[in-house]
Image (cartoon, rainbow, N blue to C red):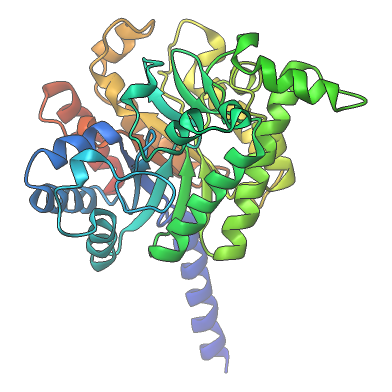
Length: 382
């Protein structure tokens, strides 16, 4: 009996030690953006995606955040948005193919969606697909529908519109019902501007119909909050296992004041499963508020307000080949910044993992990216 008890205690201790040293599993990811997908669409898509899978497996990356709707069209056939032009040539469902290939290799797929953005850099509605909901609203005979669309050096769905919210939510339900995805993912694109004329008409209507109206900025935040809450509820109602994640900008204050994204409320209320702030800064950034460790601490403090919400960290591999960033010196003189940041994430019990931006730079053959990748391999292989 004593011998059995001793063996049991030894086994228990080994299990405890192993558990303490083990890094987070199934928590590492990479973003595959629309411009990376476009390159694949111009090449041998199936061959290119097989390379994606092989590369990700080599780096033990298990979560792929794939841009399914970056603007006003999708990479899959939808009842709500037109199919992306560069995808129409295929005789198979591109998203279904991505998912099936990932499942074969134990990889998870998160459908990355930009909820409001329809067109960037132009307000020319003739550039929109005629099947786009924005185009239809602007060209039908119902004047009221025009307010569902807003302009600011681009074309956007109006966050104040209840019809817009329904459209976005219905399109997410469609994704969940039709595809075996593991998650729905938003990034940091919410309100595109702080200018008051962006939604002046909608705000005036709101004030005239509300006894105690909120100021413009609180009203904008409440519009985004309503979308996030309703998206979360719709996702969980459709499939409770689907992970709803959002990747806010690095600064909590700028999210709140400039993008009208009240991430603190989303965490407090449990409107999201994971937050993945984009901490694309070095350890020696000139502005103390944006030094990596200072940003990390702020996000840990925020995430700790609700233990049910996981915190992952977005890391910017693209910074390894800096251009005019204020921290250009640090990135130019070091080739292990991403690996050091990764190691910090792995060892911190308050951090559930990391996601790398983005695929093309992570697996680039350019010297700077290759050096960062090799150093990252050493950390992930430990």
